[in-house]
Length: 318
Ligand SMILES: [Zn+2]
View 1 (cartoon, rainbow, N blue to C red):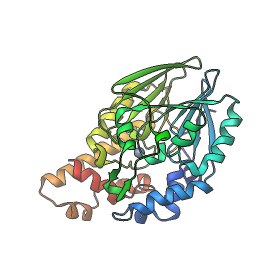
View 2: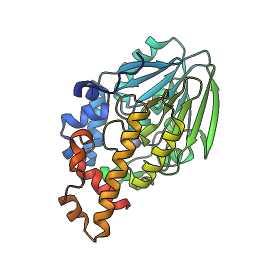
View 3: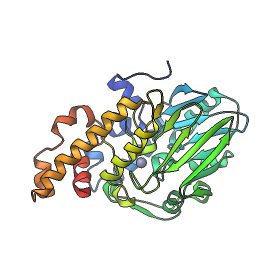
View 4: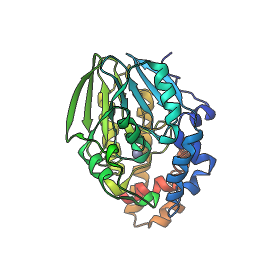
């Protein structure tokens, strides 16, 4: 069975998302609270050292490593291993072991789905191990200089030279590696302005980066171009590309499928329209939050990014 299925235990969910494991251990509502974002970034980085990496084999030799920040996809083969995202360096030893168990091929290629630290902090060591780094040009821009994320209340310093993508593009790029066609496409600004989808064409596996958070409210980075409307558009693009057979890797949460992506889309559009209606009535952000517009969704979706943070981000974007 390549996919764990629609149901997953809370424990499985937690261990399959490094972000969740760490954030929940420290109470996410505190972790994500404004002015405490430095705690979040630091906690995720430090917590990675004790996170266990789970490996899930998907299809067409594509595997996914879960537990080091964002989900990492791996395609081994004679051209050298291709990694999609590099996770958090605290899990380097675990990741190295997991990669060695997949195959003996050296690491040669790394693609970043976007610039966020939980997908790029491992860039430096992966590059030092032999990988070239491909990404959207905005990933290169954000990693090259100090970048502030207001909703984390954190300013990321410029990344070390070896961590910066050198193979960048603007709209799309097709790679032919290890017998596979790997199609990269830039989304219009969604979760950030640097998001890419990575499609393993023959295997019919789509890595949607952080345009998809399976089963939880997404974080949306307004500071670098993200918005609720952009997330909805990106989700519609993902739906247009996925068939009933497509295996879809989210940035966070378990590997999933089209019906789960439909649920995510329906949640996003429902919360958006509720909050937009309240804002149209002239309600302030404080009044809208007090009205608990996400209440009926919180039990299912509110386990990682707290409902109030998600509602605040949606309010700002409608
Ligand atoms: Zn992200």
